[in-house]
Amino acid sequence: MLKKRTLTTLRPFLRQTHLFIPSTSCRYYSRDSAKRIVASSKVLQFGKRFIQYTFYSSLFLVVATVVGFEGTHLWVEKVELAPEKDPEVKRWEWDQEVKWSGDSVTGGTDPALGYYGRHWVRAAWAASNWGEYRAAVVASPEIDLTHAPPAPQDLKLVEANATATDSFIRGALRVASQSDLESLHPETVAQLLTRHASVLERLSGKALQESRTEYERAWAEFSGKGLDAASVAVRLGEINAQLDRPDDAIFWWAQAINLTLGEAPKDLKTLPTILKALPPSPRAQRILSTTLVSLSSFYAKSGELPAAQALEEIALMLFRPIFTPSSLTLTPSHTLHDLYLLHRSSLLSIHLGEVLSARKKPLALSIECLTSAAESSQKVAHTLAGTLSLGNPGASSPIKDVSPLASYTESRSMKKPAEALLRDARRTSAEAWNLLGILNETQGKNLPAAMRCYERAVQWASSDRISNDMKPHEGMLASEWASIWNNYSRTKRNMEKNTSQASLK
Image (cartoon, rainbow, N blue to C red; front, side, top):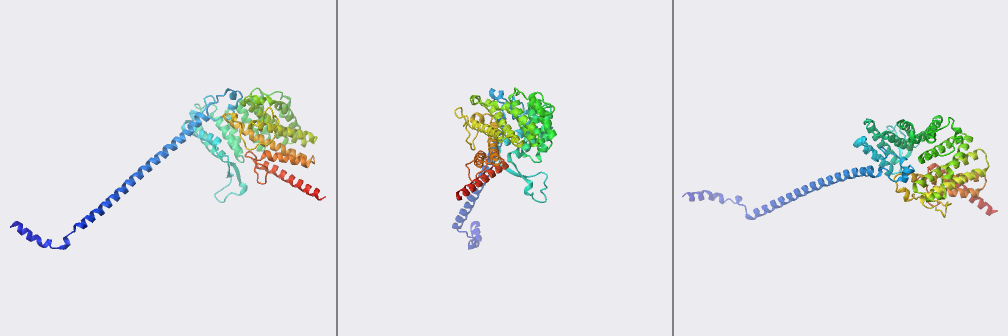
């Protein structure tokens, strides 16, 4: 009875069709749900993998950046700033030319500077040696840029790597000033100040004042003793001369001469009377030669022509015999030293030629001096480039953009001096030929000879064959190139004009 009553009771509900769900609809509903579940699962898996890949990629980039950064600093510390081991290089004191912080015997940076200070120093070294030399346009520091853009005359071109080096060395000096001075190496601060002053000197302009201050601080740190102090004194003389402080310039050059020769007269005009021999130290010889070139130029520009001539003649007697054909068979460090002095003698020859011309001496004397200067500079350039040999000691053909021989560039201590010397030798040769052209054109009235000289000047100053769109080589100043190119172009036009007139006749 219970079962029958139950079925009877439920029968009306079973007749209601709207409560009936076909089996096919259930099947479709289950498939749609499964598809949604599978799709959601794939999205979650993709998101999970994306997050994992992003995390591990970011971690890899961070680790690679840190390893690369610290690895570069470790390379600079252990390799680039390692102490010089070549006894010949040390004998000729090339390892003493450019020093950073720390003991030159142990090499590297000063541990007392700490983590950040040592990183600043290494970054400054890298910017100075590995940075781009392309010029950057900057505004003068005294110009207010908040109201209006700078005018063209307020802009100047500077080396891009010099600005970066300046920033890094400032950081190192800031750390050094906060460090325990007793724990620092005695020369750390002085060397950093010297490097900073050198960078500011390259920036020129208003930076010269700060460069002068930094050099004076370095002089005080060196206690005014030793060849490092003598090198600082030479730069102080140059900067004071540029700042139109002649008395200060003379004072500092006298200090440099005193430290290299052991004595200096109260009146430097009497220097030729005591300048009888070179000092024994190779570095002292190089510093003395640079000082005499600066002093010679200063006397000539100041109108002290007799003093300039006397100094140049005695200095040439000391430096010119240094380089001989046998110098080509010497060690690279010895040869580079001789080439350095030979180049300084070529600068003195140019100064002497100009002084003799200004004093109305015979034209032949000035031409002789300038020819000697051109030949000496060409010897320096060809020797460094490896194109001068014992069988061809008088090579004079212009050389293009080449690097010094590997025997110089493979030495950390000689690479930069050799590159700078090659660049300066090309400039000096171009200047000598340009002056020879001017003398032949203006005083000798010999236009063909002047044209030959100008052509040689253009060849030595340029980086390509002579053409209308040729450009100067990297080390040539824009003002020097403009003078040489204008002289060449003007003389060429005049000769073509003379030729056309002669053909009409």
